[in-house]
Image 1 (cartoon, rainbow, N blue to C red):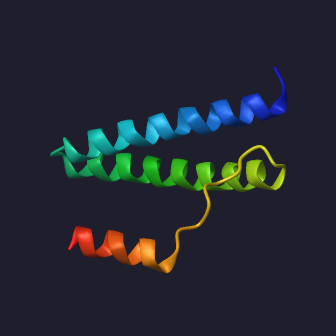
Image 2: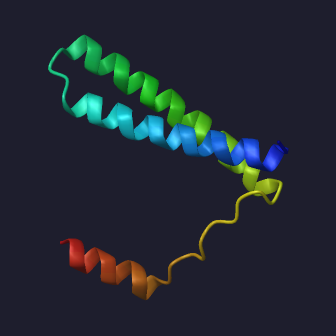
Length: 80
């Protein structure tokens, strides 16, 4: 397995984990457990971003084209 595939697999797995943390956080009443899950999620988000930057720099991941100001304003208007 080459490096690009491994990096993209890890990014995908971390994304799945972040979704699971978010679900668990919103369903947890115990504040200590909730804070622990939030810290774990925050650590994974930081890891994901660092790995994303590495993947982007190596050309493994090319993000979507940036939205125009008009597109941004349209979404803002729709969400308000």
